[in-house]
Length: 181
Image 1 (cartoon, rainbow, N blue to C red):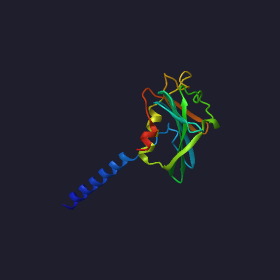
Image 2 (image 1 turned 135 degrees about the horizontal axis):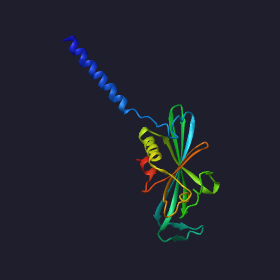
Image 3 (image 1 turned 180 degrees about the vertical axis):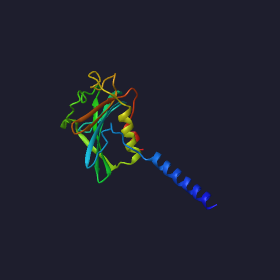
Image 4 (image 1 turned 30 degrees about the vertical axis):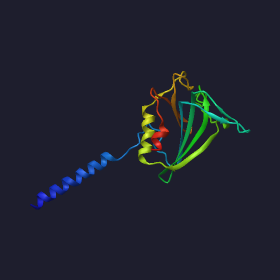
């Protein structure tokens, strides 16, 4: 009887251990997030939205624009310090469509992009999975995809030092929406 109890306990222990192994999250080696130790990674998200703007002049006059397409660019700076991922989210103002900010892989941020800090918080595992899934799902941009036009309306650029991934997607996504859930 003691042997049967021992076998049952051993079986339950190894079964629990195997479940724990399945549930652990491992960052793929192909990801720019891999080995992000005391380092940072920047992700630029550019998406097209249809919107109507209301502008207020210095004199207080309000002007309404017709509904048209604009691009919104969000910048995520993800820093790993002491095994904690901190994220800093910035948004650039609405830019007229098409957007030529993403005209090449040698992207260098310009002052006139005017990113403003939206929020900062600790990135949890689920939010990290969204970034990595988007990185895996995207396809590499070619020279025709660099600018945001009617053919490529959503792009992500992952940048870590001199390593870049400029990715395009067939469907419309909104990574910011997934991250802030």
